[in-house]
Image 1 (tube, helix red, strand yellow):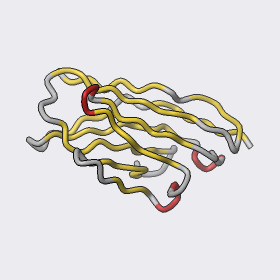
Image 2 (cartoon, one colour):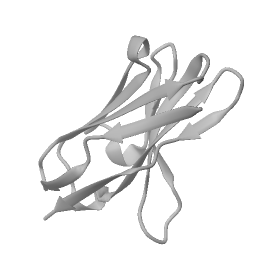
Image 3 (cartoon, helix red, strand yellow):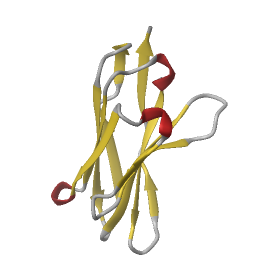
Image 4 (cartoon, one colour):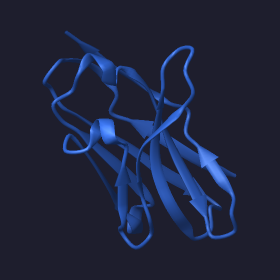
Length: 116
């Protein structure tokens, strides 16, 4: 069984920062890509940032320059450093992981709320 445990969400004022963490455990077998998505009510889940096993990253245009994704392969953990938060960043943030067998896993989500 694979578990993704997220932490770090919360309520923050506009302009503030948060750091999200997601730790993968269980029989996940050779993690490939790790990513963060976010979703707001009535909208589709959207990719925020992703990082490959080799360290290559990509970001949604709306977060470039403000969000930084990183990973610790030894700990099977992915991080999302979020700076200069805006009210429009308010969403549930989900951790996503896939492995070299093509299986994908999702975290339970962590709420980020940005007040203006």
